[in-house]
Image (cartoon, rainbow, N blue to C red; front, top):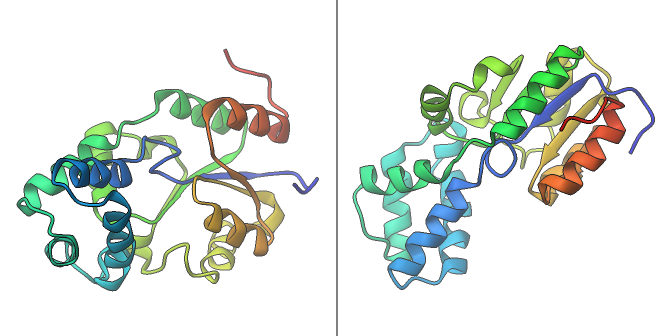
Length: 207
């Protein structure tokens, strides 16, 4: 980690701000329907990009059609989407930290590879209000797989790269952020995350 002062904290949504509904939901449906969960996720990771669903130029229908064709998954678009969305459970302890950081003067933001479901989840859980910025691949047309995204976000924030901290539960995203000069935490669990970020931000521990 750099010794440069952090000014902005950007969090991934699924797996950091909330429980990972997309992966957990698909794996659960795979087990229920006798589909190999690994094969299910391999198809899903390609489908969200190849259909353009996660980048804003493809549709939910196209995504679920690809999933049915690639895995044999059964269910209507509405049923399948509901299963995924129900798995995204907001981590209220994380939102409390975000408010704490914001009150301390840090810029807070979401940086997520998500489709329009993120907007629906906000309508349900009302968490956008706790962030200064929401960077969603669906609206930006670029995801964290593209290394050029990180310099673009840096420019939008008008900060130096090392002044930005990303928290993400996908190691490749963490590595791409670090390659762009950002500081980054690979999220594994609550305890190790809080120990690391409290040291970095030099804030008093919260109970």
